[in-house]
Image (cartoon, helix red, strand yellow):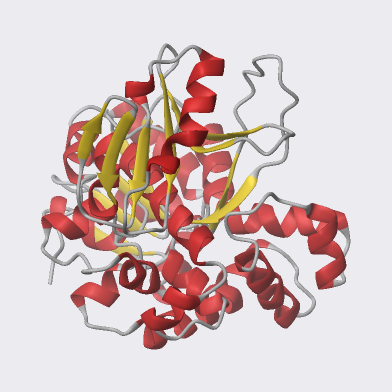
Length: 390
């Protein structure tokens, strides 16, 4: 079952202009599926295939020249031999055919470094994350409750191949830790890294305290920072940075920790049913993560980097998320309740008065389904949260 992805229009547009288009994102997010669907005439090679990788390693220039054709090449998981980009440069410069090379890969910083060195100015770099709520809604696959959405997450196999989260995420975690983490860093004990992932999940929606993580995992602060970088580069988690317009207030300077996929976070927290989500002490953080990741997906699906922040001062006043468009700031509160309460707007009103922003620009995303415009701000149901990002 093919689920149409919102990145497709952007992907086709860039392929009509750039000779190389790279689609990066976590494993199993659907990168291979979308590029093979959009570029069905291209010749496909996976650098995960041992024979293909051996041929590329042996003579990358010969491999590219031998397989040169009238349509183009898809090179899947190209981070397994990033040196091939240097050999692609010559072919691109001699014949700048739009959309000839289509690349996919799973490790952000390895590929960014390779691309910057070899293909700067020749490549469009796009990010594909797991399915957004918007994509699930368009395909009539969206869960009926927010707790179910949190529990299932957004990996396509759960919806297209009918995997249950308790079947999918244990294997995904095992594969990720045993294959990708070994490639990225020298982890002496993989169980320590798995424990670290669980501890990160236990801090979802909270301010990052590196020292506390180090103490709880019995590792150094430097190791915590290194491992967080690995989880960020692999699109497992992201750090939401504070917005620094201070309005004469002392501000919190630590980022907040979120997961791109709440289904994975649930598995790491040993949540094995949507009913357990409903009663879990981290339900609020999981729902925040679901919605803020939805905003990030909307930005990426438009071909742009997310411009997302939060705001909190030293007195505990807070706005869960701020979309920063430069000349326009849109404050957003995320609430896990299904019933609308006027108090939902308190944090927004405090911030809009400080910032000199019209109250009508604020949004409350909640666990219900109604959407409404009010004088004090806007209410929007969780299934439509992505609509806030313009």
